[in-house]
Length: 249
Ligand SMILES: NC(=O)c1ccc[n+]([C@@H]2O[C@H](COP(=O)([O-])OP(=O)(O)OC[C@H]3O[C@@H](n4cnc5c(N)ncnc54)[C@H](OP(=O)(O)O)[C@@H]3O)[C@@H](O)[C@H]2O)c1
Image (cartoon, rainbow, N blue to C red; front, side):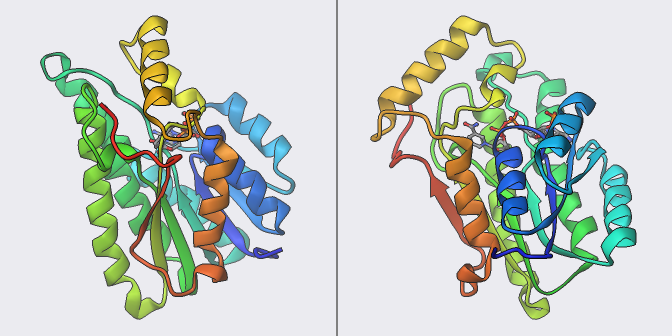
């Protein structure tokens, strides 16, 4: 019960890694608030996370996140743990990248996450903890991953800066960078056929030293560790949860 009565906001908590983390936080006593865009999966997530409150909110719109933060403030006054997890994929080789796809992926994965931090940290106090989902994609080149990798790499360095800036407020900020995890994300790459997704999956499994994809729960456990007091001397780090993955290409 590391999170008994703690207020936890999970941005992107209705699917995959975010949902697994929301369920794990609640199982350890947290009061969970979660967001997403798909009302049906938000409702299903709320039903599966005891006591949770759900919001339909697009992280690419900082004002929308601000409204969620205000709602949490009205309910509890402050946030103890913030998990910024929302993210979208976007696979395309250089010649296939469109400005629309670039802006969409960066609007969610970089700009949206940075402004979500700015809005939410306003109501966080001493001892607060933030975890942000990065990606193995920010740690090595994978052909076709330029748009996503650039957003996550930018996010990683921005978060290292903000971790420093938050030190005087005694708020810790860390990242988890998952390797290939079996979630709906892979199937949501605009422009990728099922065959291409299957090929990508096979390539990744072949390259992972553990020869399997990870599960959302395995990432969630790392998130809870970094969010908890067990990680009291850890800030500004980026924890790889990747099955020993060294290089993907
Ligand atoms: N799966 C992997 O292999 C992998 C590897 C490295 C990093 N990651 C990162 O892990 C994080 C979670 O992804 P996942 O694998 O669990 O995939 P997922 O099941 O597709 O979950 C993505 C989550 O982000 C939310 N989201 C996306 N766009 C949003 C927006 N504009 N506003 C608010 N919420 C939004 C989704 O909500 P809706 O469903 O309502 O859109 C969902 O809750 C992402 O940041 C992803 O980049 C995943």
